[in-house]
Image (cartoon, rainbow, N blue to C red):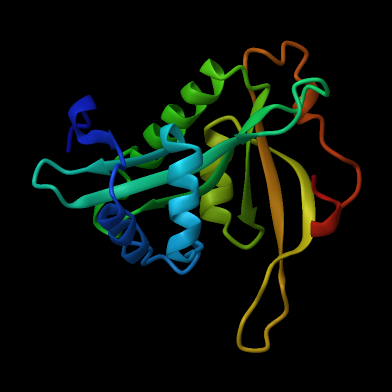
Length: 183
């Protein structure tokens, strides 16, 4: 399948949010409540992007936000969720969605883009590394487990943007942190 700009559009309606939520078939993609999606859509609509096939079926989506402090050189784009439907994987769709979010973050003057990924999700970790991300820090017990299993650690991965000319934002921390230590 050839990707073209005509398959990209910003989510504009509540029903599309429901479709996005239903599309989380991958157990490693976090699924949030409808109010969470609507909050992101209201506050950061430019960071909520879906890819549709020519027939209208949902191929994938990315949602994120801009956050941090400009004064401390921590203003950045954040990837909250990235999901691609199984039948549309291995087409470069995730990379294209990430590229679009990075471009938005560049235009907003971000120093970097960051994301959290389960340590056990090596497929995703490797994909992000191929896209230029590196592990900035490990966050202990970031993901809550269910069924009595232990909580899971996350990698906070980052990619410096052009505003961070010295790449200070991606210098790895020497020790893990806890979720409550994250700003």
